[in-house]
Length: 525
Image (cartoon, rainbow, N blue to C red; front, side, top):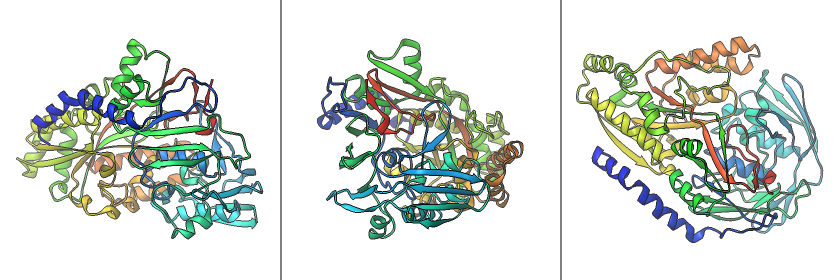
């Protein structure tokens, strides 16, 4: 949309947020004073669920539901560092060498139907083989790039054979959402994959209710014989806008929510609301503005490089992130091997104008699409002004999360053909292979919305998976980010911190990235 509409939204943002907060109160459960397991925990979540299938999900809160209701071989430990332990579904799991993992499941753990609550089957080694091997053919196949096959050695035992060494296999796959073990019988009955919410369960929780655009609710699984959940009922309330979620929290309507970066800065300066714990995590996020290299208006690399040099990221960080988010220079966050501290381009509007003139692109008109949230719209405003300064007219188009996440997916229609510029944020596991996996050639039309291809990049990605020498691994991932940047398809913005607020009497279980939760470990104190 054009600048006048953008200004109008800015002026009306607070009113709209208050109105939205009033709307969601009609289906929020009332607050309770009890601190027993029966007190309902009300968690804010940022979008509706499209698919909880580990091979075809967006990723995020779907993983939280998988941890709570389905099975895994390993779980991530408490604390600030990344480490793992065997899950309650196994009697033994061990990596015996660089390419071999053995496991033995506990016997007698049953899958139940989500509607009838009747027994479907017992968890067995065939479920493990089916679940892990199907990821190799899914939209998340790069998570399982190191998998050769799963050998079933007994009804409840097996061997995971890797095709090469891969040190972070636990954090990036087996203990993550894509390492979730499914009920083979139920998934095969549904045609081999499924959309929406899974209709089977085995873990500490089960789905009690799901209203796709409003909320979903977990209840303790009465058939679970492992460590009981600390809270019996958890309601996830869908509030897309963080500002609206903050209003809902301060009104007492939710107990736990992520917060925007400008609110994080305000709470750090002035203090959080009463009865509130503020937590800040460095996160494993990277935010950038992407450019579709296939679009006719953007195929000339001189135009893409002009756009890179036209955008003042420092101003974006002040306007959209209140100065609390660091400037990024690539996809690998701070603290992870392969993090870059400089870029090969900088804000240089005169260079941008010269490149546009050289390409004969004066008067260029472009569209930028972004999720309609406060920080993204503030960033879009700066980008719009920066591009206008070098002679490019930019139309900013805000979208709800659902339509936005389909823009670059060829499987979701033809929107990808018209996609030009967009603001994107990804997050992943703490290894550079997981940041870089989305940009290989196989991801074009899936999550590589920039749509470029480079044989050297793909070869380095495979080399990095098997490389165990950290010096060489860092060289690989630094070079890969150079390749990405040289396409002109990226304007790096930030690795924003993750801010969370929750009630003082709540004891949560949050992973070091600030996004993964084990709901069964939450409790009221």
